[in-house]
Image 1 (cartoon, rainbow, N blue to C red):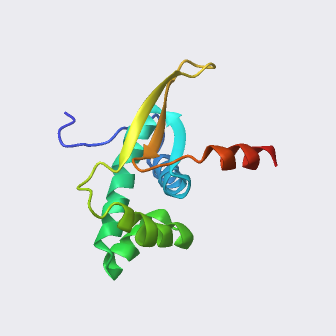
Image 2 (tube, rainbow, N blue to C red):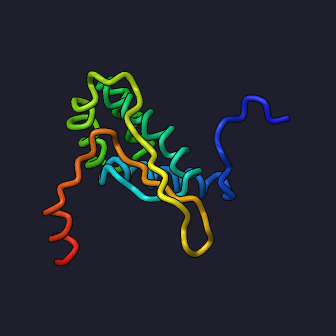
Length: 131
């Protein structure tokens, strides 16, 4: 029986899954928007919201817990300085999943995982991609 075993296996070993989720959470907090499959987005959302909650706590122990998971001092600094104040009044629900259809190669259901207050500046993104 599978009682009280939360989380998806995603067809990977536990070490691969843990490393992948750490990388995806780090990318989400850095870029504030990532494109992935729906099951990966749902698992990444769980950990990203935990990390933002740690950032809102703001004490030294929470910072050390976030560093143990994220392992990038720059992203943890952004989490505790910018994102924690940005979501200070929000009681959870820091991310959204937008379904975008299926992937062309293998018909996997795709989604955009983004932070709720994400604002894409159209002029900057076009010029950055051309350079």
